[in-house]
Image (cartoon, rainbow, N blue to C red):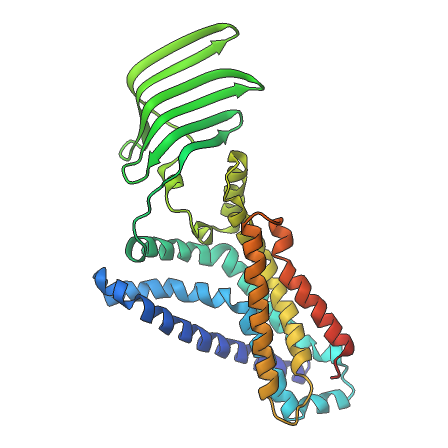
Length: 357
């Protein structure tokens, strides 16, 4: 690595850290202003609030990483161009692709760190953040779905007319075991209650129908403790729960929800694919940032920085739009989450070919 590479890399990474600190500080102040009243109403101590923001800050910093990388790239490159340093570098025989090397090296470092944080580390802190928000910031969640159908295992199908997640009681419960098109076993109960101490379900007024060809055997009882593959947490508030899952946990949850035919599996798929596309977004936006701001402007660096912010907002717009489309099930998640990267990647290549540098 040449001296000029070290110089640009140091400028780039320093500007990135500075940009992250500035933007995160602004977001935290705004967030704290909005939530102060709820913190006071909940009677939280300064230590509890501080603990919440210790989990919140890494999450939001990593979330905005592609955009902060882009802004840092534009800022550093525009400043180098404004001081005619880029002209001097190119005049010395360094090609423009070679000039890109320290930027791409820095973006690769940031992308790898971001991927590891998003995939395995930040989800664990998000579990604590989400628990805090559910307990102190959000109101009580009431499970209001009726006629609940789900496949809980291969050839095993569960039904409940309704479920009360406050008392952990389900009504008109059935669990059917099917072999191809034949009903093998059917367990029914008028009520099913979760026993927290035993970590088991208690069936009330239950009956078990076992079928052997044309022969049906019926067993009945008043109460029975049993272990089922479902847990009361599955009837809680699942909004944003994917943020607290590592990539292996996301894979397991997607497999489970797909088996059950759940309607919200797209949310977990989108989260998984976003974690893989974000590192590529860092590379693409770094490449675009250098092209946008590498030409010296008579008016100074203000225009390039303003253009950088404009392109950042456009990226946010397309990211949010494509994510919403995927979560609505209108497009396959893996295609939808790649749209912003493909679009901006194509724009970057066109700019590289036609924009004077």
